[in-house]
Amino acid sequence: MELSQASKDLYNNEDKKGKFQTVPLLVSGKRNGETGKIWKGINPNKQGKEGMHWVTTLDKLDEYDAQGLVYFPKNGATPRLKYYLEQSPGVPLGEIWDDIKLVQGKESIGYPTQKPIALLERIIKCASNEGELVLDPFMGGGTTIAVADKLNRSWIGIDQSVQAVKVAELRLQQQTDLFTALYANSYTLQLYKYDYDMLRYQNAFEFESWIVGQLGGASNAKQRNDFGSDGKMPDGTPIQVKRSDSIGRNVVDNFFAAVQRYDKKLFEKNIAEKKPVGYIIAFSFGRGAVEEVARLKLSENVAINLMKVEDIVPVAKKPTIAIEINELSRNENGAREIEFIATGKSEASIEFYSWDFDYQADRGFKPSVIMDREGIQKRLLKAGFYSVAVKVVDNDGLESVEVIKLKVNGVVEITS
Ligand SMILES: C[S@@+](CC[C@H](N)C(=O)[O-])C[C@H]1O[C@@H](n2cnc3c(N)ncnc32)[C@H](O)[C@@H]1O
Image 1 (cartoon, helix red, strand yellow):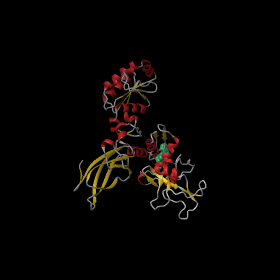
Image 2 (spheres, rainbow, N blue to C red):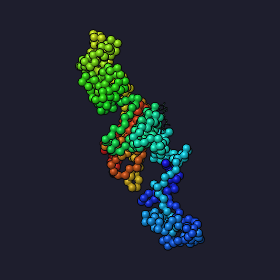
Image 3 (tube, rainbow, N blue to C red):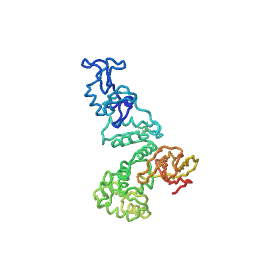
Image 4 (cartoon, rainbow, N blue to C red):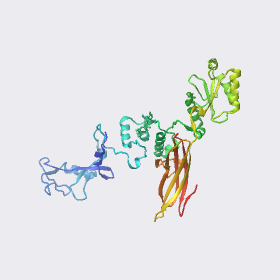
């Protein structure tokens, strides 16, 4: 059960135990035939309140008071009983929810169809338990998955718009704490296009299993098996992954020898059906490898498929980014208004910029501004040191980050 916002608003007093509202301790009529017992010098029947009595016995009033549950208004009005929000069981929610405010202020990230966090919190809590899976196949700005993540649910978010996927990722980064940044590989992001550096330099085993999956195969559960294969196609045909460029002839020869030993029957079946006996995936192949594959085909009627990563997944160049600053003004306290201008360039168009004005490398990029279409921000900075990171996201969902360190003193300097 949940209290409506209107009900919560009634709890407008607060002490160290929490928010409370007050209810009367005096009611009209007689109690066991009596009215007007004096408690703490207060006569319920004074000031024209004849016929009033305390709602409970004087002993119980003392007990409430000892527990700090009696509220004595400063203006000397009659004491009342405190009723804490925490104690309130609430009432079941109805079909119309009108107590949740529209997205506004800091919560707004600039995504056009953004939903309020409070709304998604309520829906997710109603519909799932911790550890269960939440799916938003139209995730937009990512409110659902960001809230699901906070509420310790597993989640899957999907969107046809790369921009939505990137915005959702930035929201997760925004709420990532240091622990998650350092120790947890809490999610992976799948985009339509990938940038070469990301693929080339990410964790080798992760890359291997991912690219084997993209080709339609299944990766070896453990790292490479005895035959030097990293995975297999659905019919068992082996796949080897080389996370490098200009693969040479020796790789082809070694693989050829290995696939014959690996499963002789399958090897012969593939030859009989004119299918490849194996697949080698790499970023590029040298001439020696290409010629060796052609020779095997001609002289031994054996097909080995050389697959470049970019033939399996579209690979694109990531955008570049540059940042400049202008000092606009200085106020009487010595603080300066500084304009930050980020300029991204990409073969795809630039979608937006995100800013982290308190960038700390160890906790990663944690933007305070997520969707800035122009790439221009102004900040009033006092004397001190600042680390500012800006990320540019292009239409393929690829990104680059630039970090500048600023010293604001007699002058504003970029220190690196
Ligand atoms: C109203 S928004 C979603 C808001 C989001 N659920 C939230 O909680 O903030 C709808 C999203 O659906 C996406 N969309 C529309 N058609 C789609 C499709 N066929 N497949 C995947 N996403 C789609 C749009 O790109 C848009 O971002």
